[in-house]
Amino acid sequence: MIAFTFPGQGSQKPGMGAAWVDHPSWEIVDEASHAAGRDLGQLLLEADADALKETRNSQLATFVVSLVAFDAVTRVGVESNGYAGHSLGEYSALTASGVVEFDDAVRLVTERGEAMQSAADERRGTMAAVLGLDDDKVDAACMRVSGEVWVANFNAPGQVVIAGDPDAITEASEVAIDLGAKKVMPLAVGGAFHTPFMASARDRLAKALDRVEYRSPDQPVYANVDASAHDGAQHWDGLLNSQLCSPVRWRQTMHNMEEAGFITFVELGPGAVLTGMAKRTLTRAQTLKVNTPADVDALLESLASPHGGAATGHDGESLYATERLVVTHSAGIFQPVADLPIGSAITAGHLLGHVGDDEVRSAFDGELMGYLAVADERVKPRQPVAWLRSLGDPS
Figure 1 (cartoon, rainbow, N blue to C red):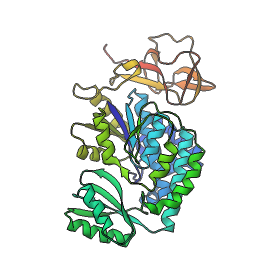
Figure 2: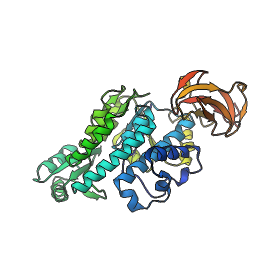
Figure 3: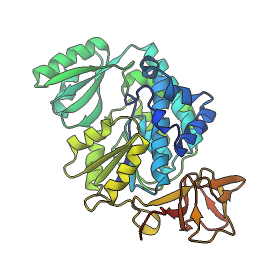
Figure 4: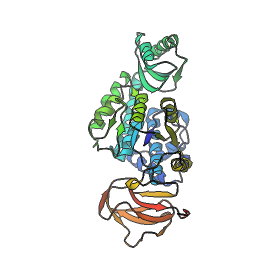
């Protein structure tokens, strides 16, 4: 079983969109810019480290790059059996799984970033990573100080993040060292996220969450708040709202996913923070990442190897590095090109059909092996509609 995981704020870096500019999935950036009402291409290509540290920028930038990577992976036919995202990454997971429409997700992430930035400006706070200490002892360290400090992230065994008032963080860090922590590392963040310091952001975000229509995911999504799988549309507004002031239970999420049968964890988005956490947490997992186009081919090769996972395609068929799926980026009624027989040679840009008035064109060369959507079928954005095989495939 394959899980797609999505990173949170802190994984961003300057120029992280550069590798994707000439890739077909870069169109996600244009779609997001339209929904957000700002030039996100500039943010991904030109913004410096200081600009990207701002919560309103880092969240949008990380979300968009994660969805670009997801789009690139779905174009080549890799599908997941479940999703999870760390903090902000939960919005990426909900978008990828179909719970939230893309435009709505962009607007939610925009509002979330602005709300958290305002809350951080109102109430000075910070965060620190406690290394080498059990969860319960980290919690005890927070409770032993008089100031306001809480556990914010249960990331991995021996890796817990605390957040709150800077003076209380300092005091709790000293207590944690006394209790056996190997090290406490201050984090370069602008607020005490996932604590009561975010209460004003939670109240503001609630209004935006109420305006969104939630759908059932195509595969279960594991929530930060309870580390549990959710396969319906209900409860997400409450879970996302609670997330702002509640700890991220990532270690528990990883354990629950492993117990459910997930063995391959693919991190989609900038950095490799979640990949490192998975290696620390899980006993038998294969960990992979995609944050550049080159990683897509490496992913396919790994999944196609005898010791790798299997990329599950349409009707359970395994898709290997020679196979590609063409996806639609619109919702509506699909109509394939009428005079395009199976076995036709397809080149990049070849017209394969329409969804309403929008054209569906191949992003790559290959041989048309079949359509995965039939005429007059209603399809959703990023749904596979055709299957191609590389012309270089000897089979």
